[in-house]
Length: 585
Image (tube, rainbow, N blue to C red; front, side):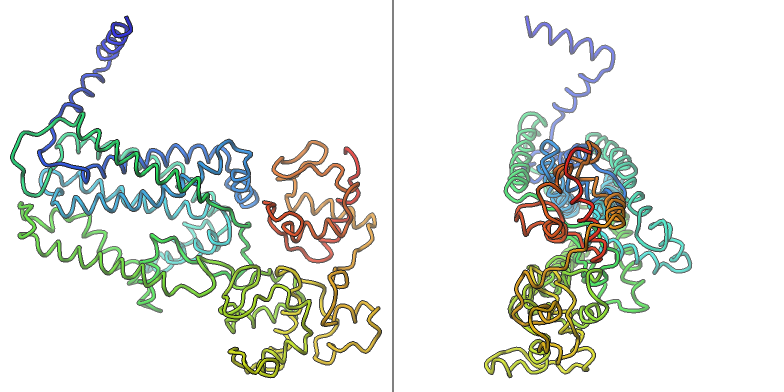
């Protein structure tokens, strides 16, 4: 009964569309003898791209392409508020790398097997175009998380457009939507990533698959004797097995090592060192060989020649033979290029800035929370490469001790002496002395003195000179407490400003302008990613609220709330406003 119903349904569909007949013809179409698992790469590429489209749609449903909300959207997806959100984002992330690997392997297989020759020239050209579309996906998707890594890598990447003669400056503004990476850049990249490139991908894939089925597989380089087998079931099962293995790896990585989320992009953080994803590392390293006026050669000329050579390869290698012995020039050039690309990628990985990892922050603290003198010290810290040996907030080298809490235990005069003559404190130290001007030395010591808890700044030092380190007034005074080398956490806590009506009004405005309602609700208005704040003032003090804003992991190490760096007055005002929330608004 069921079989009869199924047959009648398929006959009805086939009578009106012909789809069933077409499917049967394709499934029973014979494959050349000698095909094996290596011929599954094309099918695997298609499946990976389909998964990318499906997961991309799911992520786009929960993403807002604006600088104010893009990073919050990623936090929201990762938080568990979206069903399987973290898993889907992780699959999308790992699939992106898998697509690059598989499509390159597929094209290498076609190239080494000579399968781009007549009558498959157009099939090859469409494959090259699909490779370029894949690169476009990788580049445009990089900006969407709107974190520092995304922002600064895109800033550097789009800067290359300016090297194009005559139209460079115009092209740069066209790509960015302005002189700098901003809201229009994000919108343009999002549109390209979710509309333009997917449309191009589907169009090219349909044509490519049609031509592959029309001309059939080229098969092994040297024809194998025997009768070709139909695509189904043998080759179809091989494709299925390869797909199951690859997706098992991707899903396993998504579950075991899910993709994290970083704080929102800070365009003022010019100390950030962006390092691209692994598939752009060879290009990143190659550009080092084209400094100054030669940059255009590395950005446009060399890649352009390689792209054209790849695109027109069927005519460059016009010999109809697929025999490797008769294609030595093409195969040798391809092998040499592979060695160079892989070598550049490895070299880029081995020589990336020490302590920065894949684009970590040189100095963790934002200069917005520092005094002018401490800001000058931060610049000295970066210029002298101190993060090569020392870490702040877990970011930096490990040759020397971490500096997260150095300001709570060492005085400014001690810090100055340590920088200029470290052996005066420890004759066995391997730290070299740094010869700095007194201005730079004082500024650096003042910056280090601000590091009093996980990289968070304490109050500004009472004085900036070495003499100020030894208090001349009783330790009960605020100035002496802040400059003392043994200041307690209580002594180093910022003073709390009284919750005046003006401060409360200012804090309420800050709550709106800083978009705190994106995660927190008051009176039922706002997001649900964080707890509602209607009664927060009834259970939390102003000091606790200030600490929660600047260092949320200090209260809850597993908190997903990012730390916020605000001027002291704004921090006081915002905490003062929150402290007034003691019941339903």
